[in-house]
Amino acid sequence: MLIVLPPSESKRRPPDDGVPVVLDELSFPCLAATRVRLLDALVATAAAPDAFRRLHVRPSMADEVARDTRILELPTRPALETYSGPLHLGLDAATLTPGAAARARDGLVVTSALWGVLRPADRIPPYRLHLGSHLVGVGRLDHVWRALVPGVLAEAAGPDGVVFDLRSSPFQGIGVPAGLGERTVTVRVPQAGFGGARIGDVIAKRVRGQAARHVLESGERIDHPGALAGVLGERWPVDLTPPGRSGGTWTLVLFATA
Image 1 (cartoon, rainbow, N blue to C red):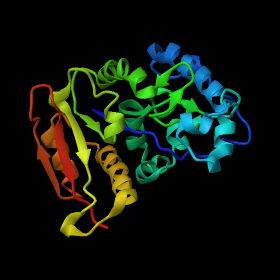
Image 2: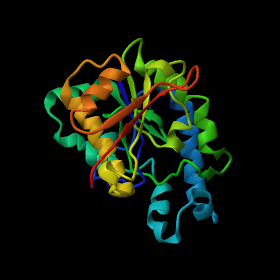
Image 3: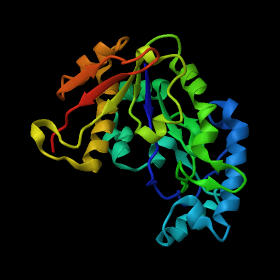
């Protein structure tokens, strides 16, 4: 089974000391050349007079933009310790049981506007980079990754097992695993939660992370979308819909409570 997570806009500050990113040690070396290209472009963009416009950030984030100019010098953390948004707080990777942590190491990836696809242990610095950013000499990042991510995710998924895609639409837009629609399940968490109570975007994101955690902690072998719905249905009301077209993905609606 492969669990696919988005990154988060918010990230933990870099440690006070430690080694910077070592590009040759990151997973999926087929992405190395693109990562180098984007890192160089990010440094140039963050130093440019129109950095805020290109990076889609407010002037109040000037410190984070300035930090991007030093990204190759910053100390690093493992990817799952770096991202700190609601979904990643819901996952709470640091408190996974040993068995669940091992399953995460082998079967979880994070897609990223800067790095493409990461494994949990890949050490990265914090960065400010939106998927819709326009980097100097590069343009939109979603266009860059759309040619690469589907193949990398298919490689990570392997020959069998469900692909559990917890990303939002923009990150799904850079690619689902190539040719694996019949075993890929995308997730919706309606903001009108179970019973009709509105839960809000932050809770919906947190629930996605909790769903990933629940699957990892279950230890179940999940080789069909129906089995995934069964595991998640132990905790939440769910509705599973098969693909509506050839090559499409399954959709699982998970009804959360406030």
